[in-house]
Length: 134
Image (cartoon, rainbow, N blue to C red; front, side, top):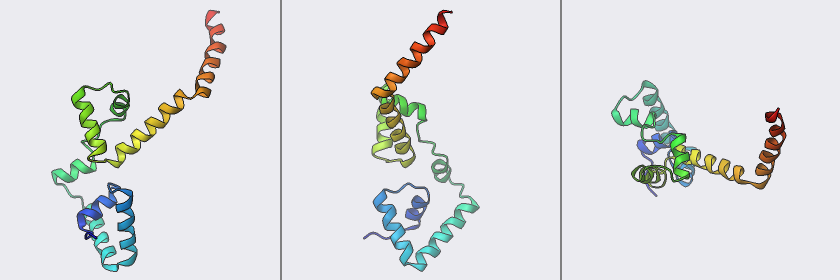
């Protein structure tokens, strides 16, 4: 089993670990006073504000596409190079924030395509069509 480093703890605090890795860190934290102490130090360092380029980059998620860009990614409406970048960001970098955003967009897309949603839209349109003619 690999050692839990300060970088691993920072990633844990940023929710940037896989589910399995997060569970491993949490299990280790439960069983180790020294690791909990290290986590406390990492939190203190973060509270003081690390101002390296990398820290600012990660904190503000500068490489993350916008929600609108993720929607365009789903529709495959992005420039091919940017489409490839977003795919890399989601699959290789495995950004948990963007993956959650994408999952939400996919759920909304599936809901919009559901038959009951289409029927409801048709009823709204039909009930409004008479008002528009007056």
